[in-house]
Image (cartoon, rainbow, N blue to C red; front, side, top):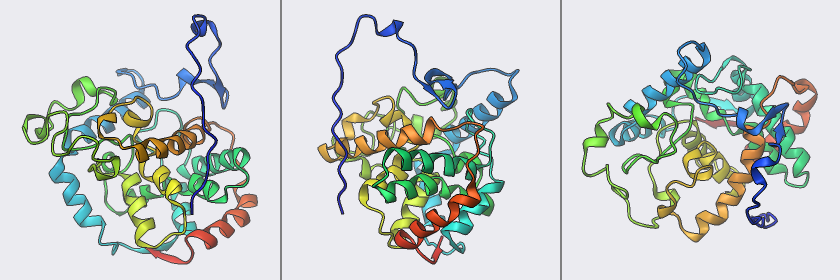
Length: 293
């Protein structure tokens, strides 16, 4: 199943570009999203920074391998997609500087904006709803620094645009390992993004859960799930030396999804009970029944 996304042309730079007003999303300007600051007087920033420093200290090649061995047996629990979504009522993402709402609210905000923009792509709406479901790991013993937040490849040099990049990796042993600390590390040029070992988190886990349970969501949607938190790549252009032409085509979908994932975070809460019947129908169509996690 292959979907089509209209090609996007890149406008030429305009000398007056810096004079134009920033786009506004959910009542905030674009630059007000994803602000990562070293501010000890702001409890939100302290929480976010602590989460990322732990992530960047402990996410090594060996650690990711241990998490894959632990979680990819798919023997932790069995649960429907709806029940997993309801669990997100009790999850607050410690890495997110943009919202303090339960994660299920963000799920419906993302899904409804995707539905508004792409009414004919019902699988896209469902991806908006479920994209963060891998965060259920936090209820089964996985620390948030190994569940939430931006992702990055392990086993090669860390990208310059990773948040808190300057200091947060100082205690990570892979930075001193010559197998892993070069531009290509344990990979080859243009080997393909799918062949990189990503830091462990909810993106990779949910992608693997969906594949294991034979979802009917198309590959474009699965790529959105797998890489929506890979901001150093899709937002900043790091790691392009690993890309193939197919990756660049898939990147268009990930960027399209990002508009609804990031810029819909606000205090406006959708009428979740009213929306359930529509999304239950999509769940039944693309990933029905009780699934293995």
